[in-house]
Length: 629
Ligand code: COA
Ligand code: AMP
Image (cartoon, rainbow, N blue to C red; front, side, top):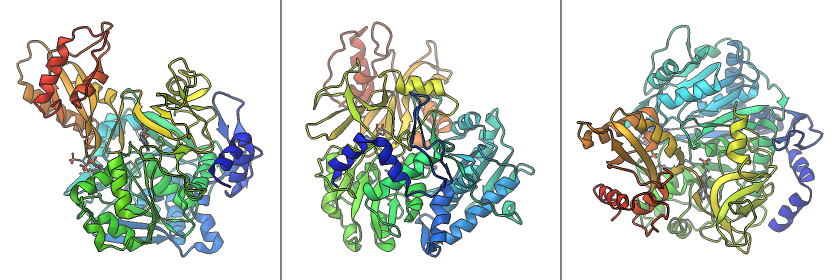
């Protein structure tokens, strides 16, 4: 069957399609049906099935005789170490950690925050939670203590599992002080913490609260896999919305297993035993789905890579990893390739390696610009597949399904809707638009298995953020169009979310940080185009009248404040002080126009602008920091 037939088969009978896909999963009790729509427009999948994600990702492969196969390859050019863990070893390590968590009182449904760098122990911690039905919430290491505290207060974890440190090129990230700071800041306190001591930095443990990773496992009975209901949450992953309060995307066990398992063959076209490498971070959804869960569920070999595309030690690192570990499919963000291309435009370093085993490159997380795609195509000589998805969906909404049928690539498009997604372009009034017309991208409800059923402790926010604007649809927050062949084009976000090096960040959250500076009366943050990172945040500050502090000093303080409150990942380095912000007569800040000015693009004078002269002031200020040329 080709793509069109598979998509049509899903559309004709979604229930049969997903029940068939569910057969590839080991259920402790098979579900009697796939969709549960009794609470529509909130939907669940495989509600009455009983299942364990860790069993499906680990134990079942050992039972099937693949215990000696490598499950995880850790490759860390930063520490100059590499090691492999087999499925049998992984099972034992995870069962032991899960046993330790249980012995300390972690039970089904309890939350556990994981704050770890790119080490296999991060995956082991996730799987250990899954094993006993605990709900993990991984927090990206590039976030500051304050962001971690916000997540602690929302998820209310019984335990936190952290590493002593992370390693960025040339710098040790001191996780433990960040963790201690976050626990101090948070109103909720975890019962205990488990600390994985790395040799690069051994952290001081707080007696009675912190336990060493190894010591806590000493003498405990390993835990078996606990079957949970299909809709029982596997994890919560926080992502940026329009405000400083992140959204806790909930991922249930059953649908996630079924959907991810389906994608590995049908989209990525990899077979059990082959190496699949997602060069991302476990703190992001790509890391959850394609470093940890999907490759393990299907019995692949996954790579945990602790390094950067450039500088660790050079722009040939990716090629070395591909050759050395015989990677069949690589998944990363376009930024990584832009970084490599900038350092090695002619691809000289590529020539040193044998990449003949590589079959495909998948890109996601941000817009893939044609130059980058073409460069990758020319130099790698494999299909370069852009695909589009979100933390909320957990797997691709649109892709080129290589395992079903490689479709012609149209550069600039992440190709076509995947089964499960009826993607439509809607106008402001919610009416479907014609081919090639730009509008809001929405997905007809219900969303497929594996996608979010709700937001953690925030059902009303879930409804108002995603379901309210277009009744009967899920609003993606992206705008774009579909061409006459059904290919989708993602053009922009419709909200205040920006994308910095494939990292999703909220300008609203950044504005909250700037507004807290005592000398700032009003502020705005926009995402300006950046040739490397896609977008970079730019701040506009109006200071309080009578402030004596020089503008430069206020800007410097704001830059450090952002690093302290949100973290280095915000990459907030530039701001300007202006007298006023451009606004509509009703007081709305004209951020879209400011972006156009910063990007030196033509813009139309907004009809509702309060005072057009302000735009010239904005332009002049931006020129001082190299924008608006
Ligand atoms: N822990 C602590 N700090 C982190 C971190 C982590 N896990 N990840 C990033 N940071 C820090 C970096 O050290 C940097 O700090 P600095 O301001 O002190 O230099 C800052 O956050 C910004 O990091 P990053 O966006 O990674 O920029 P960079 O300049 O260090 O590297 C690229 C640029 C393009 C090489 C890098 O962004 C990259 O590899 N991108 C790939 C994209 C990706 O994996 N996206 C995930 C979604 S698929
Ligand atoms: P995240 O939830 O961090 O994965 O970010 C999701 C957002 O990233 C989407 O809503 C898009 O705005 C953007 N995005 C992800 N993949 C793509 C893609 N292939 N092309 C364009 N934008 C993308």
